[in-house]
Length: 318
Image 1 (tube, rainbow, N blue to C red):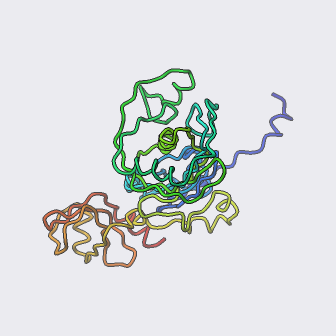
Image 2 (cartoon, rainbow, N blue to C red):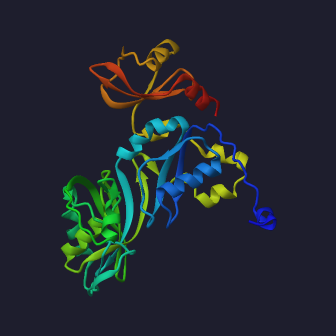
Image 3 (cartoon, helix red, strand yellow):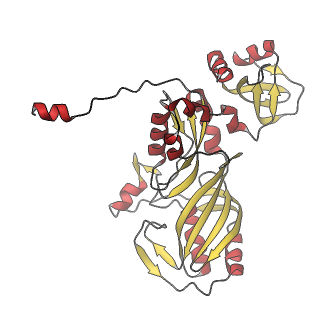
């Protein structure tokens, strides 16, 4: 290695990480994996700790809530939440992967398919259904993702899983495509749903595009793109984070006085004069003092996920 080569290398810049706490609603771009999007956002915000709340395929765009610092304690809430998607189906086209990235297996004329036929086919999948996970998925088998086996031409035996489709509505139709608004439970494979609807129509179908528009009580309202973050001055980026209680937006709120808040953060149970609930957002006496999540059984408040006092103070001061 010559001196000129060494001199040509730019100096390594050490990024000073900072302890950020909160939730970032990211509008994930096309072609980027969820983890790649997370790492880019983490780098842009110079955050010490971050995690995402469930993967979106590189083909998919849309809502990807990212949790930073103390908010990572509540990431499972978003992972378990119902989802909402805009799914565009290419009618008459079947592919090896069930989406636009695969090789075309079959092309059939789908010009005769009517809106009424699509509505009828979609209705058959509303409710609790059994889905077979596709081979081209991130589901693991012996430590490897199924898509790794699929790329080698290896078929792995899979078990079907029970999912719930809450609703399927047509939002647009064009020549050869239909866009559906799908509300579903976690773990639903929209590619599989697209293929199943195509099979029910007798012409086949594959997923041409997918955009996640909702996760639990979260929507794309207020979501920001990576390019928008990158264009911001560094000192403004941390202000994009919101409190982790955003992940519990659908849960009722319970506010405690200082003495009860201290007991709650210690993990102690207490009686409350409110109806039982599977999940509640618990706050201290200060306006932004989110303390954690809990459930109420037989009038007793029982902590589920707690913030530490320094984390509470950090959120109040943010």
